[in-house]
Amino acid sequence: MTVQRRRRRGDVMTYAVFFFCLIFFGLPLLWLISLSFRTAEEVYTSALKFIPENPTTFNYTSVLSSGRFQQYLLNSLKLTMAGSIGAMLFAAPAAYAASRMKFRGRPLFLIGVLSLQMISPLVIMIPLYRYFADLGLLDSHLSTSLVYMAILVPLATWILKGYFDGIPKELDEAAFVDGCSRRQAFLRVILPVSVPGFAAAFLLTAILAWGEFVVPYILLSEPAMQPVSVGILSFQGSFAQTATQILAAGSILAMVPAVAVFIALQRFIVQALTSGAVKG
Image 1: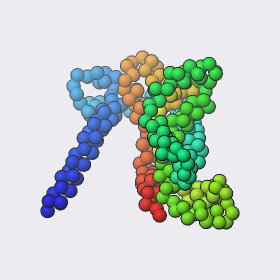
Image 2: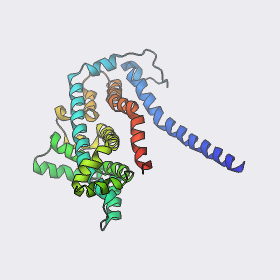
Image 3: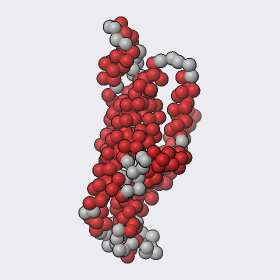
Image 4: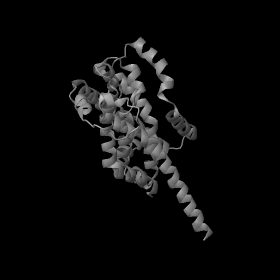
């Protein structure tokens, strides 16, 4: 009975923490949605109401009718795809080496990869901006996507390593017996059975890349080159009236693609991540 009470208390505490996190992160989002449906006169009302008195979709139609917003979405798609695909190309061999090969400094290598994931991009952006300025690489999607890759590689490496650890090593050994080299075993045997893990890593890194703000804000000053995470700020001076409600609508629309992908594929992502932990 004591064990059951402890488990119940543990469950209650767990759900209490989850509920607190939901309130902490959910209330600002609800307020943002409320602002996006308000009129300009109602934005700065003194009454604290989540439901607008005169809800309107004018803010959304204003954002969607802007040709610049569509360009921002296209730029975000370019940077997200380039950064995520590039991160997969570099993370896959690194994760395979960390999972299968024993080499000197392997634990230090893994700790180093994890440490890189903990570093905020803001720490490196100022010196990186000076380097890019000297090399003439500012206002370029190519150079910005390279920074995206560098930021996403640590996360992709850890996800793929966890998946490779769940793949039986007997597959590698069977490939070696058939005359395959280490590279051939990786390309012909391991990669085909790792598609779920690659899909999960790609989707998670793509969601992070879609919401990246610091990197494009510093490296891309041309409005035509900016992604949606930065471009919506330009709406602040594009309307005669206060643009708070316009920014709110643009922010909601900017989140829709990432949220839609996550909701549609969340079960696939969870299955891909957990299958690597229980195989073998």
